[in-house]
Length: 474
Image 1 (spheres, rainbow, N blue to C red):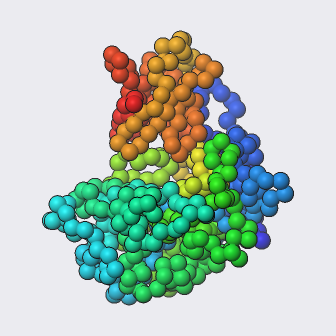
Image 2 (image 1 turned 60 degrees about the horizontal axis):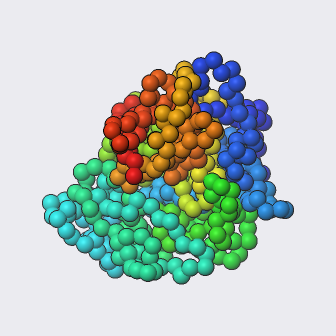
Image 3 (image 1 turned 45 degrees about the vertical axis):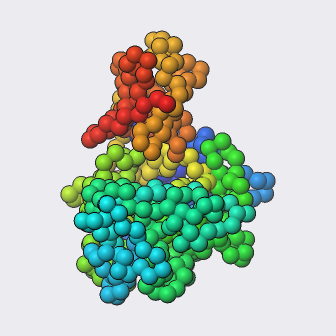
């Protein structure tokens, strides 16, 4: 078991808070156990890095809500979702280091069993590994829903072609000019999965185990999809939804391993970050310092992203943020029934990993992040104070209740007990607090929310410090 700094552990557990604090409200701190109950979360697992070492790791709750289920501990496996993409990037960079792949040549030169179909978007600019790792390849398919444990699991070639009825996502294609803009794409990452298999001649999960997971001291982790019978009997968390209902069959299977297939623990991800810190310090390791530096160099700017706790630019497998003095590298992940986050600050030797088995509890991860930042003096997460006025006539906002869309994103405005609430597909309902006129805020994030009615049309603007995202009622 991991040794823990009990004082700091206790402080983190008892000082959760919102991003926004309401002026005049003297009660700000919340306990982890209370917030787990609020979000209907059976289990949470946390690891914290300080001074370049694992400071503590601890599990909370149980692997499921079933009577007699195992306790969560620092060895409990969770699905990592899109955090898988960061480890996948390490695998691809290892092949670059070996001279078997390049960052800036057409990946179709290396793909053998399938090629990216050429179209009007690839005429002037071909898709490169750099594009795929930085989500700038212009490829489609944002993410994957996975398959129930009872379904037939399609092959990677069937997934790339979107073969129906075996596959539940679209064919993976280039739908805008490569290199032109950031477009998050699990589809593009799946191309890298095939690339690694075609180049190495091995199955992705077994090659990644030997060449990435073990060298990064991630001994509990696996890309096996599905888990082997032996693995599924281990201490494995079961996935849950926002209403507290379990995922059918406990979890989904993700043949899109590079994009979403990693099973891991916060301790293993902390080990990964610690080894990454050493590589940045030019200590001997599995990757050259030049390639590690390339991974944390901004490749493309990110606009209109979903969380102010993540970042403003994309590296190679990492979201990048922070400021000129303190770099932040991070990745969130979400699968059916699971969500997680890792975040690291190499110059300070600090980092955190949080994994949760409820797929609508990102706000809980934020609250834990803020608590860790407060206890460990990590800048950039300071609380923001705002004043609230009481809604004078809730009836005048009743027409705003409904569903709103902005491109592929969706939000919902609802009205309960004379209060307004906002929710996204990845969150529970968050109360809207009125600041002035038609301007509102939620305590869970720093963005402002503006409700606009013009004639018979309703609109919701999500206003960040840099952008305005406009949602229209449908």
